Image (cartoon, rainbow, N blue to C red; front, side, top):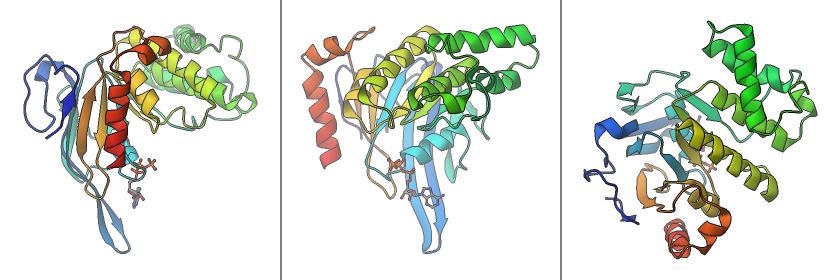
Length: 277
Ligand SMILES: Nc1ncnc2c1ncn2[C@@H]1O[C@H](COP(=O)(O)OP(=O)(O)OP(=O)(O)O)[C@@H](O)[C@H]1O
């Protein structure tokens, strides 16, 4: 049973992390299981993992290295086979990847010889085949502008800094207008200044687009700053959801307002205590 601090969710509490009314739920992970075959036999990474995520919610995921965070996220993305249980988006079981789910990885893996604009257009062209070329260009440029790359539309990806490449990755993910955005440690390789800037950009676009976001991070402060809820995974094998923290800070948030909030250190301690035990 998960322990929840902060105010409880408004809807009724069901058992086992199944907290919300079905109309509110965007993502539903039910009795999720993942087994990797290994030379030494089957390795059960995740078992009986239950989690519901609401529409327009921002959830961060923390847990020890190797517990299965990326495994879970890649299963939601449809890039990793499900061994047991199911995942549904708006009540429909997923069967593979789809444009309803956008992914941002730690390294944006752009086509290095293509421009920033061409990289974003790759996804846009696939998802909006019926739009005119001008409309598709407008969508790609709009999101590049949103991430502060209005002067870099025609720069080759290989000529962009790591931070700028990740901005393209963010623009690319939002430009396909997904229902769910999945982020796997997207700022893990960036310096703290760039990290802070991109967190602000991410939250601004997320807030405007009203989509659901699920983000893995190793950074407790980032987890609190961005999230409506921080989901803590137990250590593997057979990892599951160990605990959930509701972050009751008003939005829009600033780093200063979050740091000065009376509950901030209580939240932080709660997460660190979970990770240390
Ligand atoms: N394809 C695979 N075959 C076998 N084992 C795998 C495979 N992919 C991952 N694993 C193992 O499954 C476990 C979970 O890996 P995963 O990458 O999901 O963890 P993680 O929590 O995201 O780790 P980190 O925080 O270090 O990124 C690890 O023990 C890993 O070695």
